[in-house]
Length: 128
Image 1 (cartoon, helix red, strand yellow):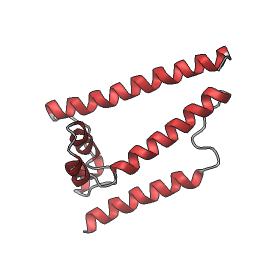
Image 2 (cartoon, rainbow, N blue to C red):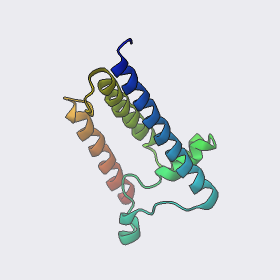
Image 3 (tube, rainbow, N blue to C red):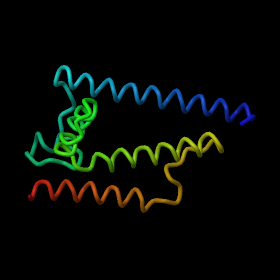
């Protein structure tokens, strides 16, 4: 890569990714040490678990390399991780190469499928 504009974009992407990763790890460590975290509005108001309930506790378990506990807290954490990495990686690539910000262009069905799986999981975990 010899284009200085692409190099600047790559640096920007690395900086944003690093800050985001540090913030997420910091949040998980804070939750692990203090128990302070963001409450789920759906759970607090209805007692029902949403499709994301348990992800913070799963992340804490992953921090301790306890994969069984991570799956017990939220069985779909790998789906969330893969989705975030794919969407983020694709967006970063397109931005560095073309300067455009797009989330999996032309692949709306991936977003819809992941959303359907998460909503379905949220419904099933409250029924079973």
